[in-house]
Image 1 (cartoon, rainbow, N blue to C red):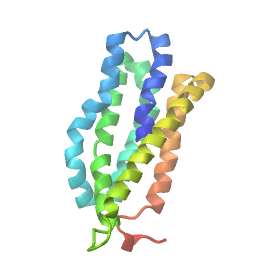
Image 2 (cartoon, rainbow, N blue to C red; image 1 turned 45 degrees about the vertical axis):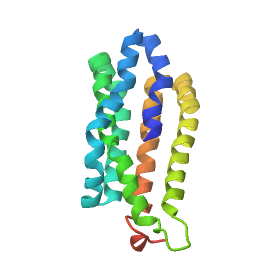
Image 3 (cartoon, helix red, strand yellow; image 1 turned 90 degrees about the vertical axis):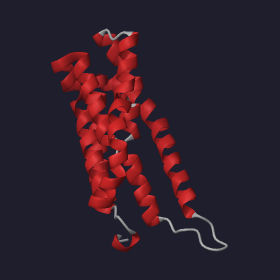
Length: 182
């Protein structure tokens, strides 16, 4: 999730040079993900409760990966407006991920016991650290991919890697500890 979202800022430098994207358009593009995210965050937790957090996470990650792969084609076909719509769609399909992660934490982390600690706080911290590490890794990776393969290739590589991660996630993840095979 974070890798696809955070790839926009460094890749926008490469895109702006080719597509003559101005400062105002850059700002609008950087806000597109948030625009999509806004409308789907609240229903995300309810979806996770109804369909299972693993299934919602897998669907959101897969759809987001496909949006990432589609960015070059949407720009080529529809220009900056196509990019904005694709980024907003990516935000919309990523919106349920944060509330879905809280569903996972509530099912996997033990509740606080008398004299014990609350492991949900630890789980939330690990989730936040993962987001930061992902951001630290994707920014230089996106720049390197863009320098070697162009910004279109960078988006496709990031999207394909995200699809591979999603497939692995779906096979290994479980909604509850009782459903876990490991």
